[in-house]
Image (tube, rainbow, N blue to C red):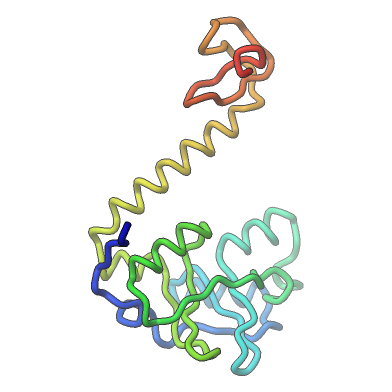
Length: 182
């Protein structure tokens, strides 16, 4: 089955001069830069070499939520080093599919081993707003799966047999007791 294309290339939507900081930049400094520039992520570079990405989520989950001091941590300490990248010559829909597949909202664009730009979900939606519905559908599915996963260990009434159970498990969009889940 052929993949639908938009005709808009990644290089047409990406930010050509993304914000980059060196790896020794403190998390407090990174947060200040993000606030000042109104962005949700920074690329971490050492000279010309792309090392990683630091997002607001990284700061919250890997520093603040763990009671670490942002002024004492560097970007290198918590940045994501396993980068998913793409070239600028691909269709924007391919970028969206790659971002969705890896559950990311930021995509470094690399050509011939060099950082060429940066594509964010906002960039995609600014260029191709009709992709918003596709994105919302995928997020809705992911949110429902997440809600069911959180409910897995909760107690309540089995939606199949009607009996009270200490542990309910998701089954085809419902929550059921252990005997009914088999």
